[in-house]
Length: 290
Image 1 (tube, rainbow, N blue to C red):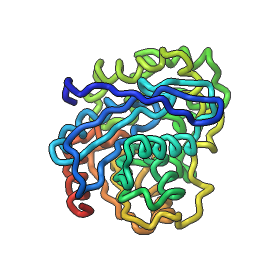
Image 2: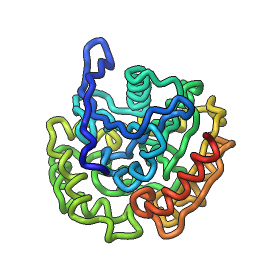
Image 3: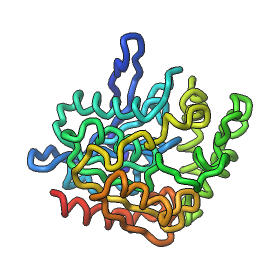
Image 4: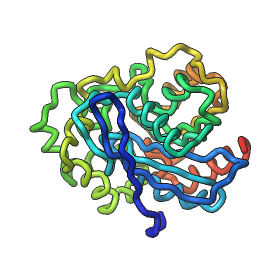
C-alpha cells in the first residue's frame, strides 16, 4: 500500500465501562454516487494483509480499512471477543464516518463479522464480498486447524503455549498451511503477523477463539439470514481446512442469494495468496453492484 497513507485512530466506547483505541486507514476520493468499501481482515491479521488489494481500487473508490479490536495496531483489552463485538465495531465506525451504507469486503473472521453485522443491520449493507469466510465449519475442522490452523488451536492452550507460538517461527508455521503459493509467506508477512503478538493484552484476543469457539460461529443465525442484499463468495480452491465443496453449501443456506467463485491455486488467504485473480474478481463484482 502507498507509504503516504497515514494511520488514524479513534476511541471506541463500546460499553459503559470499556473503551479501546482503534486504528483505521482511508483511501480514495469521496464519491456520493457509490457506497464506500470497508475491508475487514481475518483472525490474527491487520490492515496490511490487504496491501495487494486496496491499491488496485483506491483510485476509483472510497475505501476504509480498520484493525479489529484486539488485532493489528488496535488496542487489546481484556474483554469478551466475539463476532457480536466486531459487528458493533463496524457499526461504530460507520457512525464515526457518517456512512449510511457500505460494501463490506471481509476475509475469514472478518467476513463472518460482516455477515453477523449484515444480519442485524441489513439496511446498512449495500453488498457483502466474502473471501473464504469462517463461522460455519461443518465437520471439517479438528482441534489444531479450527483457530488459524495451528497458532493457538486447542481449548486447553494457555499463555505459556501462546508465548511459544507468538514468535516468527510459530507464525511462519501457522501461515504456511493457509497459502498455496508459499513464497508469499516471506519475512515481511511473518513480521506483520508476529509483531502484534507482542502487544500488551494480545493473549486475550488471540486466545479467545480457542477458549470460546462458539462466540466466533454463525450457527445461531437463522437460515436464511435477515440480510437479503447482494452477497458474493470468493474461495480458494486449495483451502484444506475450509474446503469449498463442503463449506460453500452451508453459507448458501445462510445467504441463498450468494453466488460462489472458486479461484484455483489459492488457499485460505486467497486475497493475498492469489491477489491478481482475487482483484480481478472483486473488480467484476464491484462493477456489477455499482
